[in-house]
Length: 125
Image (cartoon, rainbow, N blue to C red; front, side):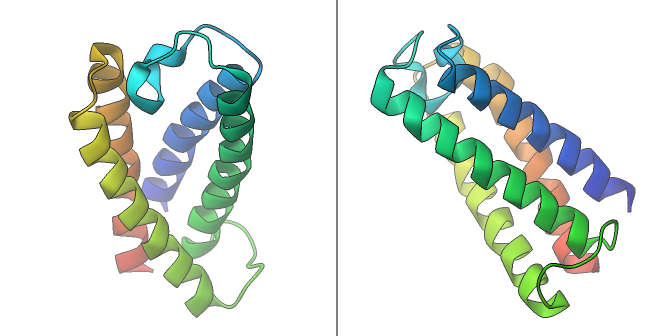
């Protein structure tokens, strides 16, 4: 399913951003409210943890769309896909109200695209 591939690529971009943030790159204005340019150590740890969650979400999206084999039952995978769709929808709302212009302009559309892809995949699968 092409929509799942689009969602996977868009979420992979977010995972790459968070990996860079975890490594101390100065892209903090694009994430977590844009409060820091370079994330402090505790935030870097959170960013690193987020990367694993995002990669897991990509796997779930691809499994729900039958692109890759299932780790869990199809019903459980679909339920997890719905969970991430809800999470990403909330993320869109948080990005919209962010004080960071960069986060609003870049991450809001990216989150919206990703949420849409998770919703469509979960509904159609």
